[in-house]
Image 1 (cartoon, rainbow over the protein chains, first blue to last red):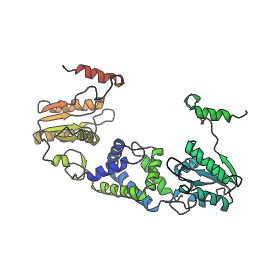
Image 2 (cartoon, rainbow over the protein chains, first blue to last red; image 1 turned 90 degrees about the vertical axis):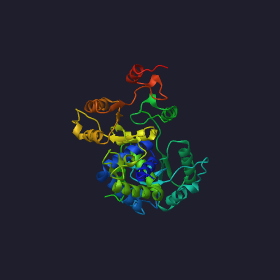
Image 3 (tube, chains in turn yellow, red; image 1 turned 135 degrees about the vertical axis):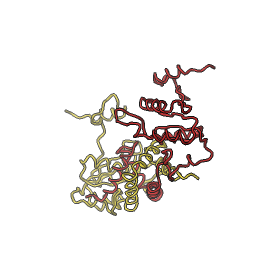
Image 4 (tube, one colour; image 1 turned 30 degrees about the vertical axis):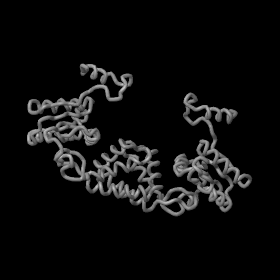
Length: 197
Length: 197
């Protein structure tokens, strides 16, 4: 048994993180060991704290450290607008743009016949309840422009049809995008949704 | 002040690891929070352990959990051969190939006029002492094939000239390498070192 087995175990565990492989995990662990006092110990402490305090918001599914998240509790947020996203990462992406001032609902995935994910496996029933109970006026479906994302958007639109204003994010050429690098689907969508100048 | 500030701080700290950026740090942290019991808590515990126990081998500079590392202590290792590497990561790479059965000496970097790194900033004096005291018969200079690496190799070769057999890793076409993808320097080196069949 090697006396370095904790280090090996740490490398192996780091390598399982998304975005890291064996090589980058080794580099990261060496870096951490070199900056033990400055980086490794604080990082371990912070992980302990987050492991002990992180939880899902009971209302919207966002990740935070309280039962109801800051966004749901904030009085500055418009209560009539609800933005539906697949994942917490998508919620964070929306928040970074700082343009949406309503609240969110995280589905926790998309419907998928292949993976046998039905509406009950996502937070879709909770969404329908919220629309009833929180006097929502507009539901913005900010789902990914993938097949599963759009299937899920259609399903939710069907369920909520007539009960609330339903919108989705516009599709088209991304800001700074070059036509030559865009896929055909994006160009088609952008052309169909063309606007008068 | 946000109640998610620990999570934000964790993301920021993870983003400073080599190989991770802000986006992959966010993905990694979300993944960790989702697998709190299975991944985040054990990872934090392991980091605490490593932070408390990891240290540099006093003899060779390898990273381990004892004052003298397993490789230096092992009785199965040839004591006459010393492999000089720049970095612990290089030592680990050599060990993965499982072909070298001697011991190591980690320099901790390369000589660099630009960054004002002299022999005293590396573990070069210790290397010279070890060659004297440990009856080393061969020093294998396994330094990177970069300008700084080769400068360092030349410097060490000068210092040890005549006192010990000096070798360096062969340069040439990597196994599985395609000529079309190799740089000119590698092809030149491979041609100069061509072998009779």
